[in-house]
Image (tube, rainbow, N blue to C red; front, side, top):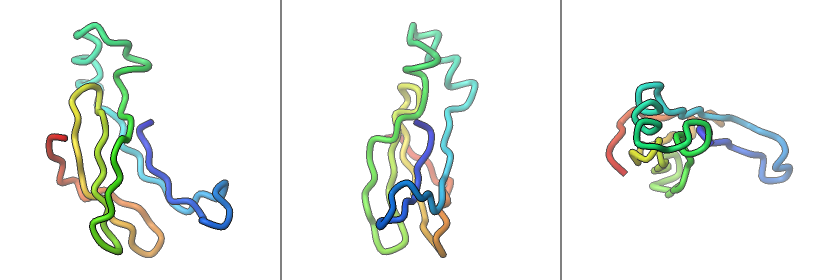
Length: 88
């Protein structure tokens, strides 16, 4: 939850890169105010990873019951989110 990992295909216990995508404290409070469990339900569970091209992946997460999506880049073995978030 709240993270995406690039793993070595030959040894999946070897993490090559990671990108962390946690829920903001504000979103977590809003979620908890709706009666959800802040430690379990009010997190960002990654639900969609869709390859756009060789270096770009479209990713979507639950984001504390306010689903959002973004584009993630894999360049030189490093994952980064583009920060172009939209409703999921």
